[in-house]
Length: 171
Image (tube, rainbow, N blue to C red; front, side, top):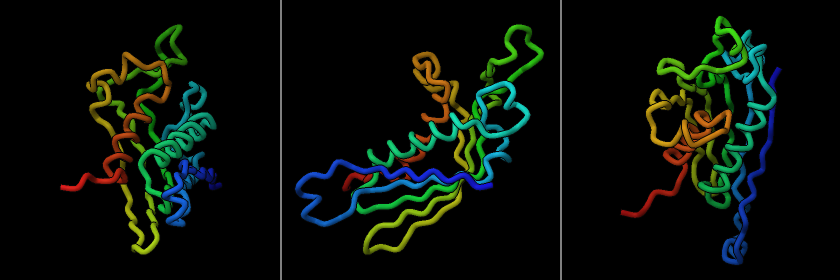
């Protein structure tokens, strides 16, 4: 089963960009067989594999917001997520903490994906990547300042998206 979430990330268009007749940037996110993902659940019952609708919806919305921030008008980005391994692990042997994800140095987040970036007048860019953040616990402010259950995955995607798609300053 293939889950598809189409997220049209519409950028606010100024009068100048309307005059250029470029359509707004868009991000399309596809989840390829999410029921087979290594780990995409924030619920301890999901430890046995399976996709959590909250995780899929939240990550798709986050990628949409990143598209609004970094993509230029007229660009279209299609992301196919093939696997998710969230930060941390459930450790059911801990009494009274059976539904807690324990964050350890060896349980970093990983997302396998491919993407296609299209823009008018230029050839499409395609790539397959494994996005991971082995240092997610060592980065200042990432763990202690956030109550977001997907803070590590969002921070990892922020870094990846900015490195791949943010306009580069002229040198």
